[in-house]
Image (tube, rainbow, N blue to C red; front, top):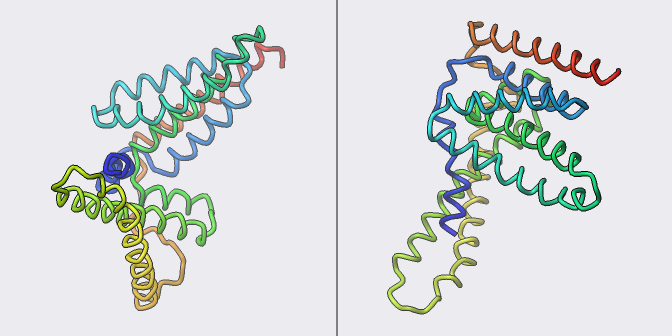
Length: 241
Protein backbone atom coordinates (compact mmCIF):
# COMPACT_ATOMS: atom_id res chain seq x y z
CA UNK A 1 0.00 0.00 0.00
CA UNK A 2 2.88 2.36 0.76
CA UNK A 3 4.35 1.73 -2.69
CA UNK A 4 1.04 2.57 -4.34
CA UNK A 5 0.65 5.78 -2.35
CA UNK A 6 4.21 6.84 -3.11
CA UNK A 7 3.55 6.48 -6.84
CA UNK A 8 0.36 8.51 -6.58
CA UNK A 9 2.02 11.32 -4.63
CA UNK A 10 5.40 11.46 -6.29
CA UNK A 11 4.37 14.25 -8.63
CA UNK A 12 3.33 16.52 -5.78
CA UNK A 13 6.58 18.46 -6.23
CA UNK A 14 5.00 19.98 -9.35
CA UNK A 15 2.94 22.28 -7.13
CA UNK A 16 6.09 23.87 -5.77
CA UNK A 17 7.68 24.65 -9.13
CA UNK A 18 7.41 28.02 -10.79
CA UNK A 19 6.95 28.10 -14.53
CA UNK A 20 9.35 30.61 -16.11
CA UNK A 21 8.83 29.36 -19.66
CA UNK A 22 5.93 29.68 -22.06
CA UNK A 23 2.43 30.45 -20.83
CA UNK A 24 0.49 27.46 -19.52
CA UNK A 25 -2.43 28.37 -21.76
CA UNK A 26 -0.25 28.22 -24.87
CA UNK A 27 1.31 24.94 -23.76
CA UNK A 28 -2.10 23.36 -23.19
CA UNK A 29 -3.33 24.65 -26.56
CA UNK A 30 -0.25 23.19 -28.27
CA UNK A 31 -0.81 19.80 -26.66
CA UNK A 32 -4.46 19.76 -27.75
CA UNK A 33 -3.50 20.87 -31.26
CA UNK A 34 -0.82 18.19 -31.52
CA UNK A 35 -3.11 15.41 -30.31
CA UNK A 36 -5.79 16.43 -32.83
CA UNK A 37 -3.36 16.67 -35.74
CA UNK A 38 -1.70 13.37 -34.90
CA UNK A 39 -5.11 11.69 -34.66
CA UNK A 40 -6.12 12.89 -38.15
CA UNK A 41 -2.70 12.44 -39.74
CA UNK A 42 -2.40 9.69 -42.35
CA UNK A 43 1.27 10.27 -43.12
CA UNK A 44 3.80 8.67 -40.79
CA UNK A 45 6.33 11.43 -41.51
CA UNK A 46 4.33 13.92 -39.44
CA UNK A 47 3.99 11.52 -36.52
CA UNK A 48 7.69 10.66 -36.62
CA UNK A 49 8.56 14.37 -36.61
CA UNK A 50 6.49 14.99 -33.48
CA UNK A 51 8.01 11.89 -31.86
CA UNK A 52 11.48 13.29 -32.58
CA UNK A 53 10.45 16.54 -30.91
CA UNK A 54 9.32 14.63 -27.82
CA UNK A 55 12.65 12.79 -27.63
CA UNK A 56 14.53 16.08 -27.99
CA UNK A 57 12.54 17.81 -25.24
CA UNK A 58 12.94 14.80 -22.98
CA UNK A 59 16.71 14.81 -23.54
CA UNK A 60 16.90 18.40 -22.30
CA UNK A 61 14.81 17.68 -19.20
CA UNK A 62 16.11 17.01 -15.69
CA UNK A 63 16.65 13.40 -14.53
CA UNK A 64 13.55 13.57 -12.32
CA UNK A 65 11.41 14.83 -15.19
CA UNK A 66 12.80 12.18 -17.55
CA UNK A 67 11.89 9.47 -15.06
CA UNK A 68 8.40 10.90 -14.70
CA UNK A 69 7.93 11.09 -18.48
CA UNK A 70 9.08 7.50 -18.98
CA UNK A 71 6.71 6.25 -16.29
CA UNK A 72 3.81 7.95 -18.03
CA UNK A 73 4.65 7.04 -21.62
CA UNK A 74 5.88 3.45 -21.39
CA UNK A 75 2.79 1.80 -19.78
CA UNK A 76 0.34 3.37 -22.23
CA UNK A 77 2.50 2.54 -25.22
CA UNK A 78 3.01 -1.08 -24.15
CA UNK A 79 -0.71 -1.50 -23.44
CA UNK A 80 -1.58 -0.20 -26.89
CA UNK A 81 0.98 -2.50 -28.47
CA UNK A 82 -0.52 -5.51 -26.70
CA UNK A 83 -4.07 -4.54 -27.69
CA UNK A 84 -3.05 -4.06 -31.33
CA UNK A 85 -0.95 -7.24 -31.45
CA UNK A 86 -3.69 -9.29 -33.23
CA UNK A 87 -3.35 -6.94 -36.20
CA UNK A 88 0.11 -8.42 -36.83
CA UNK A 89 -1.28 -11.96 -37.13
CA UNK A 90 -4.06 -10.70 -39.39
CA UNK A 91 -1.52 -9.41 -41.91
CA UNK A 92 -1.55 -5.72 -40.99
CA UNK A 93 1.53 -4.98 -38.86
CA UNK A 94 1.61 -1.38 -40.10
CA UNK A 95 -1.69 -0.74 -38.31
CA UNK A 96 -0.21 -1.75 -34.98
CA UNK A 97 2.85 0.43 -35.57
CA UNK A 98 0.79 3.44 -36.63
CA UNK A 99 -1.67 3.30 -33.73
CA UNK A 100 1.06 2.61 -31.16
CA UNK A 101 3.13 5.52 -32.45
CA UNK A 102 0.15 7.88 -32.27
CA UNK A 103 -0.56 6.85 -28.69
CA UNK A 104 3.11 7.33 -27.83
CA UNK A 105 3.09 10.86 -29.27
CA UNK A 106 -0.19 11.82 -27.56
CA UNK A 107 0.84 10.51 -24.14
CA UNK A 108 4.33 11.96 -24.59
CA UNK A 109 2.97 15.45 -25.19
CA UNK A 110 0.77 15.18 -22.11
CA UNK A 111 3.76 13.97 -20.09
CA UNK A 112 5.83 16.95 -21.21
CA UNK A 113 3.00 19.25 -20.20
CA UNK A 114 2.77 17.52 -16.83
CA UNK A 115 6.40 18.24 -15.95
CA UNK A 116 6.46 21.79 -17.34
CA UNK A 117 3.49 23.43 -15.57
CA UNK A 118 2.04 23.28 -12.07
CA UNK A 119 -1.42 22.38 -10.91
CA UNK A 120 -2.32 26.01 -10.29
CA UNK A 121 -1.17 26.97 -13.78
CA UNK A 122 -3.27 24.17 -15.25
CA UNK A 123 -6.31 25.54 -13.41
CA UNK A 124 -5.63 29.00 -14.84
CA UNK A 125 -5.16 27.53 -18.32
CA UNK A 126 -8.50 25.72 -18.14
CA UNK A 127 -10.11 28.98 -17.07
CA UNK A 128 -8.63 30.65 -20.17
CA UNK A 129 -10.45 28.08 -22.32
CA UNK A 130 -13.75 29.07 -20.67
CA UNK A 131 -14.14 25.75 -18.89
CA UNK A 132 -17.06 26.02 -16.40
CA UNK A 133 -16.00 27.10 -12.91
CA UNK A 134 -17.92 24.19 -11.37
CA UNK A 135 -15.84 21.66 -13.32
CA UNK A 136 -12.59 23.41 -12.36
CA UNK A 137 -13.65 23.54 -8.70
CA UNK A 138 -14.42 19.81 -8.60
CA UNK A 139 -11.21 18.87 -10.42
CA UNK A 140 -8.97 21.19 -8.40
CA UNK A 141 -10.47 20.14 -5.07
CA UNK A 142 -10.28 16.45 -5.93
CA UNK A 143 -6.59 16.65 -6.85
CA UNK A 144 -5.67 18.56 -3.70
CA UNK A 145 -7.66 16.28 -1.41
CA UNK A 146 -6.16 13.22 -3.09
CA UNK A 147 -2.74 14.54 -2.17
CA UNK A 148 -3.66 15.35 1.46
CA UNK A 149 -5.63 12.17 2.12
CA UNK A 150 -3.04 10.05 0.33
CA UNK A 151 -0.33 11.31 2.64
CA UNK A 152 -2.58 10.70 5.64
CA UNK A 153 -3.32 7.13 4.58
CA UNK A 154 0.37 6.53 3.94
CA UNK A 155 1.31 7.79 7.40
CA UNK A 156 -1.36 5.61 9.05
CA UNK A 157 -0.27 2.53 7.13
CA UNK A 158 3.38 3.18 7.98
CA UNK A 159 2.45 3.50 11.66
CA UNK A 160 0.70 0.13 11.54
CA UNK A 161 3.75 -1.52 9.94
CA UNK A 162 6.13 -0.01 12.50
CA UNK A 163 4.02 -1.38 15.34
CA UNK A 164 4.05 -4.90 13.91
CA UNK A 165 6.36 -6.99 16.09
CA UNK A 166 5.09 -10.49 15.29
CA UNK A 167 5.30 -12.52 12.13
CA UNK A 168 1.54 -12.61 11.73
CA UNK A 169 0.11 -10.71 8.80
CA UNK A 170 -2.51 -8.94 10.90
CA UNK A 171 -1.29 -5.59 9.60
CA UNK A 172 -2.78 -6.43 6.20
CA UNK A 173 -6.16 -6.74 7.84
CA UNK A 174 -5.72 -3.22 9.22
CA UNK A 175 -6.05 -1.78 5.71
CA UNK A 176 -9.81 -1.50 6.22
CA UNK A 177 -9.23 0.49 9.38
CA UNK A 178 -6.80 2.80 7.60
CA UNK A 179 -9.27 3.41 4.79
CA UNK A 180 -12.11 3.94 7.26
CA UNK A 181 -10.11 6.48 9.23
CA UNK A 182 -9.14 8.26 6.03
CA UNK A 183 -12.79 8.40 4.98
CA UNK A 184 -13.83 9.96 8.30
CA UNK A 185 -11.03 12.51 7.98
CA UNK A 186 -12.12 13.34 4.44
CA UNK A 187 -15.66 14.01 5.61
CA UNK A 188 -14.40 16.32 8.36
CA UNK A 189 -12.05 18.11 5.97
CA UNK A 190 -14.82 18.64 3.41
CA UNK A 191 -16.98 20.33 6.04
CA UNK A 192 -14.08 22.52 7.16
CA UNK A 193 -13.26 23.43 3.57
CA UNK A 194 -16.85 24.40 2.86
CA UNK A 195 -16.91 26.57 5.99
CA UNK A 196 -13.61 28.21 5.05
CA UNK A 197 -14.90 28.98 1.54
CA UNK A 198 -18.04 30.52 3.03
CA UNK A 199 -16.05 32.67 5.47
CA UNK A 200 -13.80 33.91 2.67
CA UNK A 201 -16.82 34.75 0.49
CA UNK A 202 -15.75 32.32 -2.21
CA UNK A 203 -18.33 32.57 -4.99
CA UNK A 204 -17.04 29.68 -7.10
CA UNK A 205 -15.30 31.92 -9.64
CA UNK A 206 -11.63 31.40 -10.41
CA UNK A 207 -9.62 34.51 -11.13
CA UNK A 208 -6.03 34.98 -12.31
CA UNK A 209 -3.93 36.47 -9.52
CA UNK A 210 -0.66 36.52 -11.44
CA UNK A 211 -0.55 37.51 -15.10
CA UNK A 212 1.99 35.89 -17.40
CA UNK A 213 4.35 38.20 -19.24
CA UNK A 214 4.78 37.46 -22.92
CA UNK A 215 8.36 36.27 -23.50
CA UNK A 216 10.62 34.61 -26.02
CA UNK A 217 9.37 31.15 -25.06
CA UNK A 218 5.84 32.11 -26.06
CA UNK A 219 7.11 33.29 -29.46
CA UNK A 220 9.01 30.04 -30.00
CA UNK A 221 5.92 28.05 -29.03
CA UNK A 222 3.78 29.95 -31.53
CA UNK A 223 6.39 29.42 -34.24
CA UNK A 224 6.48 25.71 -33.47
CA UNK A 225 2.67 25.52 -33.63
CA UNK A 226 2.66 27.26 -37.01
CA UNK A 227 5.37 24.92 -38.28
CA UNK A 228 3.42 21.95 -36.99
CA UNK A 229 0.31 23.01 -38.91
CA UNK A 230 2.39 23.63 -42.04
CA UNK A 231 4.03 20.20 -41.81
CA UNK A 232 0.63 18.57 -41.32
CA UNK A 233 -0.77 20.26 -44.46
CA UNK A 234 2.30 19.38 -46.54
CA UNK A 235 2.36 15.74 -45.49
CA UNK A 236 -1.37 15.32 -46.00
CA UNK A 237 -1.12 16.83 -49.47
CA UNK A 238 1.51 14.22 -50.19
CA UNK A 239 -1.10 11.60 -49.38
CA UNK A 240 -3.30 12.94 -52.17
CA UNK A 241 -5.73 15.19 -50.27
